[in-house]
Image 1 (cartoon, one colour):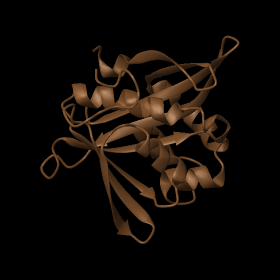
Image 2 (image 1 turned 90 degrees about the horizontal axis):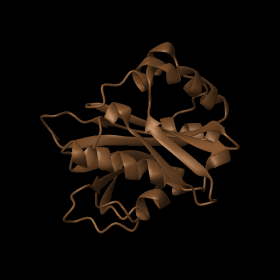
Image 3 (image 1 turned 30 degrees about the vertical axis):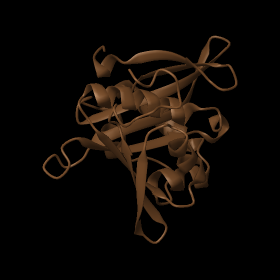
Image 4 (image 1 turned 90 degrees about the vertical axis):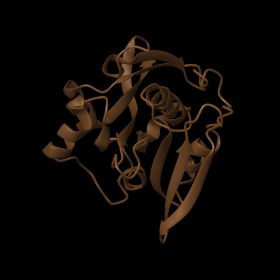
Length: 191
């Protein structure tokens, strides 16, 4: 595999459109600022677990200036008539290495206009490829129990997972990346 910070791959969406999945870059800050304007209140709440309409300068730095070891993020760009439209971002951040040395926390956001097209599934697929090649064995995701869209992505990913309730309405999902336990539903995942 190439260097994660240079990761780029072409995919097809469920609706047949072309999707570019690439590593997030520091120059993507304006994309994230604009993207927040296109999220519904519900999508923003599901992503951040709190109402949020914009990102601070510190958050923009955290979300775009990555080392691609401890913090990996991929941007999904839908291609239409030669133009690229930012559609979603998936990322993982390594957990406390002493407690869980082979685990990373996972998060996604897909702009409302582009939901239900397989973008989160493709982001998960490519984050899993990078994570496996980096020696990770598990992802953890914290989400609201009523976030049925993300629960559906995880249920249909082919990755074995378990869940537990953290607090009222908040779930912690643990997804296995172990090749021997993974029977993927999506072709190409066994890479």
